[in-house]
Length: 453
Image 1 (cartoon, rainbow, N blue to C red):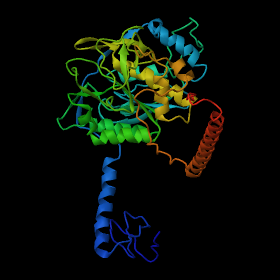
Image 2 (cartoon, rainbow, N blue to C red):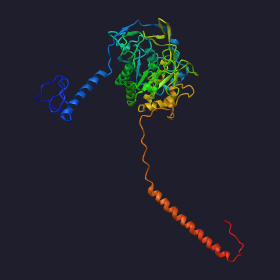
Image 3 (spheres, rainbow, N blue to C red):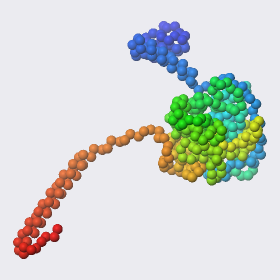
Image 4 (cartoon, one colour):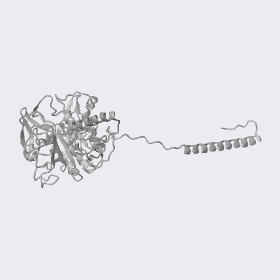
């Protein structure tokens, strides 16, 4: 550190004394170890880098958007909030081993509304800037009714006092990782009108949202709102900000899960789904029933990984009850699709993170892939917690292993060679002596006798 004794405080003064930089009243500076010409060049570079970091730091940005009217909620009977039968059976065993306690799951979506069944919900950032309230952060207001359903699948607590498994006294609804926390990051909304140059719902804000999730301490990141573009995986990988964000997540030990996408007009066959295209992302397809995949489900980026995709009733984005669907101007909008399959896998990853706190993302993915039904890729949280790792799936390794240098066996090899020569000489000597005896004995036999070899 350079001392500033006797110096006046400086305001935006770039060059001070003794090759030091003074920045915004900071009474410290970095020593530059270059000549006078190079010092100024490096100084300018450092200053620009600092400004770039400030500009690129994930932050809630006010967007010039117009909030549209939110859809209505179709209220559901609590008794209809039942889980998939296979998933329910698995969770009754899995929750004896892990419940997601201490694990934070970031939900990058349309926001997550406050709900009594989500006691560990915290705000993480609003990249939309619409449907705000003076008392509630924008990311805790879910106009679309999408992110709240996703968060409920992950972390909804069971009805207080009913216990687990469901004892029949109240609603049976419970999240896959009911004791995990939720970090809500609002990245998009269908109920806003934006300018053409707005960043709402773009790949740019998706990358920023991932960085925000990492900065907020997420252990798992769920991305159910994805981008579907008619590009190849090679072109997809060229979007460097998103690639950098996913690489950072992998290096920090954070598991990223994304919906595989739904086939349709906006996502035709052959499209690339972001960020499900990445090898380090668990891409989740939708299961129609216990035996078949949904026809609308896009294929995953690796082997098939699927989860239940139809939600009969989930946590309501308005109030403290349940919702069966949203009522839009186009009609009823059910909770169905790969968006609602992904959180089952995210929550399973949360269970694994609690149970195996030091496992790498690669090991978490391996445990999940080694526990699924190979035919339909059905996730089973209990099997994922109890299966051993046999990594035969085409997953990306985190580090390149160096080939060890073979030991120097030359002394041993020379010893073996000498021994072989000695044994060979002894064998030849024995043969010669035998022939001599035979020749000596044949002198007493007739000339017609022969040696059978």
